[in-house]
Image (cartoon, rainbow, N blue to C red; front, side):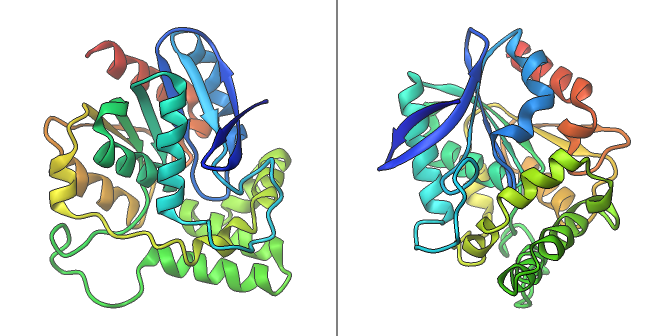
Amino acid sequence: MLHKRVNGYEMAYIEVGTGAPLVLVHGSLCDFRIWSPVLGPLSRHCRVIAPSLRHYFPEHWDGSGRDFTVDQHVRDTISFLEQTGGASDLVGHSRGGHIAFRVAEQRPDLVRRLILAEPGGDLDGSLAPARDDRPSPSRLMVATAVEKIAAGDVEGGVGSFVDAVNGPGAWLRLPAAAQQETRDNAYTLLGQINEARRPYARAEAEAIRAPTLFVSGEKTTGVLPVISRALAAHIAGARSATIPDVTHMMFVQDPVRFCALVLDFLRSL
């Protein structure tokens, strides 16, 4: 495990392979360990770098403080990329996909190619005209989990979140190691409830200039596929690919197909 000093924070990361940098940004309740299934295949072709965002494992955070926001994680990722030596290929999954999108929006000079694996968040009225003022599904998921975690029921909180994203029973089907990784990051959800994540707008999608690939799981339900389709429709030249028989954790469930899609995309440009 390595570290970079990023905006006053010691950001932990792992790095394997040589060649052009490929930076992997994890999602909610995860950390750099989540990418383990794809490190081998990707690192045979790229210099793969997987950081843990601020307050995720290996830090064991208690949820206190005011520096757990999307904007802070975007700033940290920008500084991290600057320290890698220039423009990188960037992969973001779920909440990490939202962060990767914002990095590409704000610092196009740092992103050569962008791969978004079911980016999380919400759509504003320019992308979802029927949008109403009810709390978004993503915020409701977090709020339900946070209520349980704050009451001391960590298992129930992270389990409800995992099931809401990946389908009923998903938490119980996770291997013991994956469950522990999730528990290690449970209190990041307390920060996420007030992370100030703004919804995607059509003008923001149209402003993305990096060649972009969206990767989805065939069996993912809910708002995530809707977000991917809406963004892909407004990013010039964006490509989309679906991995059969998997849900949101596609690169864990089928790392071979996920890596093949990523590498084919990188080679094609």
